Image (cartoon, rainbow, N blue to C red; front, top):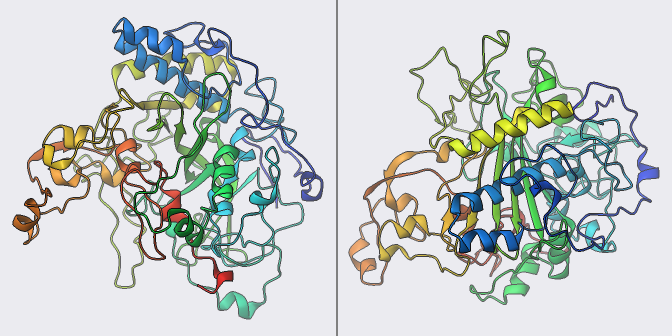
Length: 552
């Protein structure tokens, strides 16, 4: 299996798994860190983008500067502080790093190693399909496994097959959910024939439908978690349903409390990264993407290039089209939410690039209805045509466009494909102590402060991850917590108990903070708790499985 390096077409040999497994990485979150300087390097040019790029992964925004700006009511500059934090986190997370935990001297030095985030943990290795104890829970605090858990299969949506002994999980994305079959066990033809049909469950966006690009290929998703968060999950056994039930004791008000980052410790706190990957074809310009080799499941028996799959898997290259960064910090207990997209997602300069086209928008079909989910047949199989026509409901703010332009110029000088990415926005709590506004309190608070913390901006979406949540004008109850929408027959009775269903027309897309505030924990084997109990992480209720070894 050939392997291409990250961001480059240069050939790099695969590092043997046997030599990788002995490494102990110096992770940013686990290593001791000296107190940060009065002004972090990335803020030396504040409020402008600092063209001197660094590998710092700040555990929080500069709290002292934030307090100063708030005291002088310079609120646009407070937003800029979070936006610069977002860009710095994006650069550091995608900076090349070797297996010893050392950053490359330059962000364009792709021969040094894949991006830093590949040293973290795949969510599917923590929330195993068999509900078993993750191998990460048996490691020391500063250790990371650079090989896959040998007790796991490659992916639920991939029929089992044997990975080569030299497989390097940092350089090849396995896109799909993990299932409970040994990675390296050879599979007989009978076993392969008996494998469950591909459900394409990990292709689906959160709670909705798959996204189809203009080449007719599905977009794939994966989630990475940092060691600080994994340590908390391991300590409290939250990786399976039984562990969560024991943790909550059946109490729906028991809350998870993931570690918080601080500005004096780089990389500290809980981090969750979500990636949207698009299959690249010969017509695509790979120099405009952060890209990687990948293994994906065939669709209707065919690979994305319309060829017959080998051993029921497809070897492709994928380009990053969307990246969410979620980080819990001391100043933002409702988390900081940053989202980036590849610049060609919805539009292209066809004069400068006449041979290219947008990834998710057909300019020759202006009458195509945007953000419509593909159809399903009677068996629940999703259609692969037509491509999804995507439009952005809330425009990128002007201050972000200006900041992205400054970042693009610096990154172009650095010679990296990161210049082809843009910050959509950064969401953060303006008042972390503010509780959520209840629906019965009415508009606009029931929507604008649904998660608590009075977030700004109120709405934040990534077109590759919340495509079908960009509804625009809709009934208010679609955005409110814990209400029925449209009104149910028992509405009058529920109104007496403080439950309402407001059908007032409002403009709304989705909110990272608002959506994640609804995440909970399992309180029984079949029920999860309510708002603000999952500490803004959907992994607990959406990924945890029952521990099959317990007989449940």
